[in-house]
Image 1: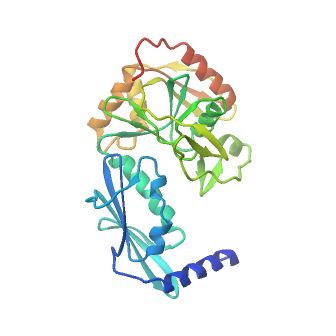
Image 2: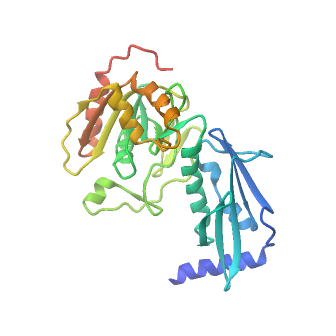
Image 3: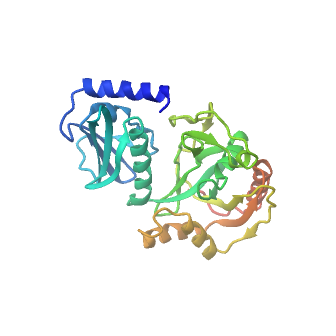
Length: 314
């Protein structure tokens, strides 16, 4: 263990020993969002104080709510070092975790669990930006290059909706999910296009979505507020030196491609299909590989210009 890490753990150990360790549930936080109530409880206050679940898009603090999801962080000091066991309900999901790592783990787990369990919304792995009031949906799994493409649009003045999840409601509208703009390797910002050439960025991503914009890469982007229907869906996967060859998709193929990027595709298939069909039946969709984000963004905007907007976007 390096000296800096050891010093941090020693500090945490002292703080843990000096704090009043209570029974499980002695300290509790409750959050509400996406149709769910989420409680996190612990026998040590310092762990909960380090949690930042209110930075998860759509979650806000709540009081006295009966939880749909209950997380328990049990802290014990074994061999002089505080360690954490984490439970979701009665199921243990982490054991012997360092205290410093636990808040980030819990936050990430809450986010993925909400994405799969939200009762009134479907979470699709996708970037989403609005260009002149028209929404572009860019589905893709992590490390497919969607963040780089989203960032290119934002640098041109687009409105930011998401680079992680498109949150789709029952009528097929997309709700903003303004996470900090990043593709992660651990906690660090990485760029798949730079990584392909051996270059990795070394700046921390921002941690909070702001009311009037989203702080990312030391900049503030204009952020979407109202849910809107998408006008264009482009499944564009990054490949080094990839050549743009856009293939127009039928509504059926569009729904299946969206389903392949949907978190709850297996657990809530019928509901997810309904929401995605609401998109697929109304939208123009293409599939392609792409090269650099600058060129790809030009191609996407050309496709958008060719979409006949015959219906109001509401």
